[in-house]
Image 1 (cartoon, helix red, strand yellow):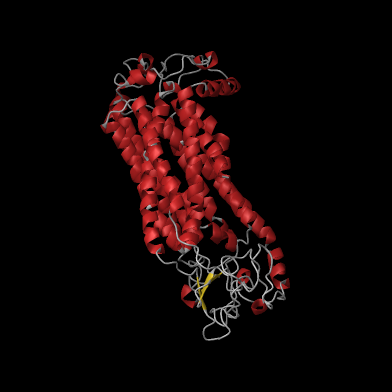
Image 2 (cartoon, helix red, strand yellow):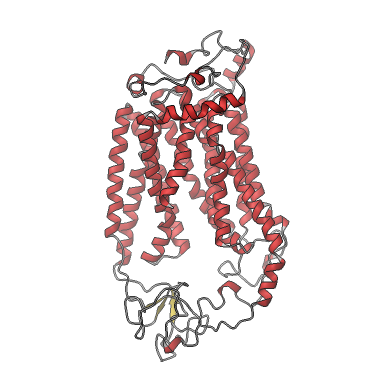
Length: 586
């Protein structure tokens, strides 16, 4: 590690004495200030990502988008990020990292502001007073399919060109967000690790990732807040509206959160431009604890082409007074595959990366369907499920990441000790996941599924031939359960034979009109509340214990690669996490 200090000794830099004094006296020479700035930027990044997810259904209704279109918009962030993350993490390590992070934040701010732009380029949202939202008509209630859709089709066609433009604008905005996010994590983490003591690195990195994980909680909370305001509340008098936020025709102010996130991203990025390329007062203690990590490095040396490149700012310094005859951009691009091969030939790096991909695959699938699972298994509403997840699972995950970093610091764990800790917590969290197989509520009586529906069993996509719903146009592909007064759950009010929107006159429930009523949701199961509380406690423990492995894994990864490849190694990790981890869950 002796060559790491080259360029930081006296005479190794090009700064004048006056510049050095100003740097030392500036608050930007403090790594703790950089930590705060990095956390603010990562908090904003996590917030805007989760906020998009929280308003996807609103965007779908506002611009008449299909579910596939919404999926493309949500995936555009990943496309922009994956396209550039390797190049940014490789070349960024040789550049001014704080400024590059700041530029990324500015690009993300621009993407967030562009995400809100469609609302101001299209006409105001209009709804028909006294009518229900058209996509709900005839879907859940008992009604014939003879309604005239000509007017609706004409309106859709007239707005098609405008919708396509808004759709493309949203895709471009999300790609900008993904591109801007590329330098924030790999370059920020490597910069922090370069300028703190080795024993403190785990605590700092744990704080950074805890902040990133806390961002989605803020995003969902912000989405819940913004959608309570009418979409055009700045242009019209909302007191004259005859609908509320509970009405299916209501469109919330989805654009407000993007403006707030854009402002937060912009101002938090400005601080990054004040930090130097390397801090003059380096706190890094590279003499302690380096033996065990260096023993885990692969025996093969770096590619010869890479050794001829100008050294990066995060590991090996160079004399800036010497003339630079650097290689061309094409020559540097040719080195990237060789450096990637060198990293993947490191068995420790490869195993840690694969383990992280498997873990993120489980977490991604778990998080994607957990809300739906809570709705179906414990009869919760969508808003209640999201609120419970935001108040329990996400804070527990943040606490686990922080505790993981704190334990590595307090126990002064070596790389081998960190590996053992990661293995232990992953085994415990796996046992917690297995326990979910034994937690839940009984299905209860469901008409046509667990109890007889006349003489028929429901089949997907087919209309049952039952006298009480002979005049109804309902299919099993539409599921919006209601609980009948007879204690039986029906797949929708249509299957209960309800002829009115207030769920009365449900002929399949009872022939007596006074008893033929239903309420939204599944019928409650006995003992379900106690099972839900147990489930909530287990999921909190699972999130906290499982996330404790994240910080030790990152510490192991950056300790077992060459110092000059630290940023690039993190870039490869995040690339594979997005590719392999998400692919498993898909």
